Image (tube, rainbow, N blue to C red; front, side, top):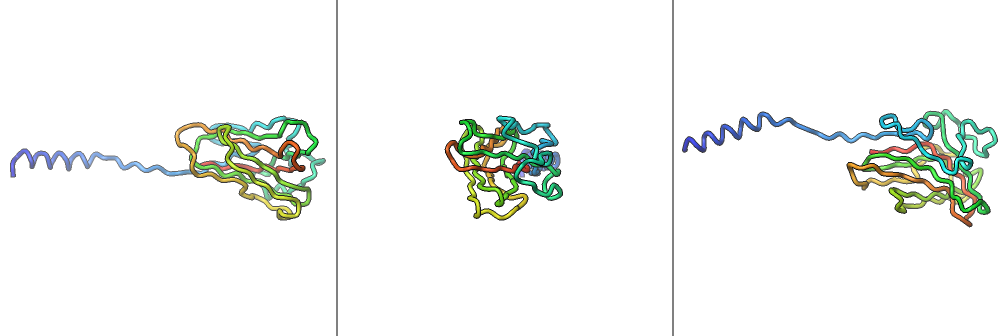
Length: 179
């Protein structure tokens, strides 16, 4: 064997000994409806503000979930009526991830839940549960998931409550998780 081949083999083996193993660990991050993202500080923006209430601080809200059963004992309550103005209540937040999971509280005692989901201003899905078709009062219900988001950039998630001319709708937003 030539000395060149032996020397090349030795250098190849030595270079492998300096390779540092790298592994990517995916992590779920929770953005609470009130406390926001613990890493970036991003908060939900609720518009119009008068169409949303911090549910745990709203004794006049129709829905009164048990605070001990929701994330950080807080949720945001929004009611939309068919005869409301053309302004659809929405909740938006910025995050950076490849997957998104949205959790709400469903309340069959009050009425319908009619939610439309957008990511980066693009329609991504719809959730509808008619009065009588939803569970009585159910916590941490996954109402939307998406595990195919582009990595390495910010995304804006928006939940819209109800539709113009549609039936009444109640949204009780608890939290989202992104990966």
